[in-house]
Length: 150
Image (cartoon, rainbow, N blue to C red; front, side):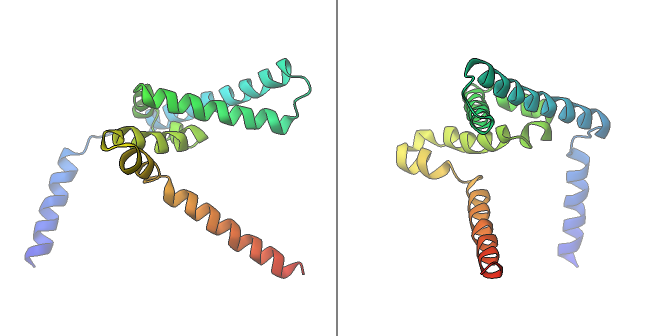
């Protein structure tokens, strides 16, 4: 009885202290910032195809992803990406820039602990489970595909 009453008091305290957000402005900011990031990726792809006419579309998309990841990591390092993320919310998380930020942020936070124990080990704290889940899922799907196509 005491535990549930304490939980109710704590939940009421958290509810009182939690900042109130308006959903429609947040959705609009996430939509236009995420769309702007995607348009930037398309612009990079188009510029790659324009300046390197022998480049294939697949290579241009790969270069666009590489440049977006590099740009997001750089902006994370100088502290600008966090401000963009605070303004746009999920608009920065959904594109590949959010994944780049999730790897660069812990690495920057723990770099003072040294190269191996700080930077290298903490880099995949957030993104590690995502990478492992993707690899394991692709192996399972590949095995299912192999079994049913023999």
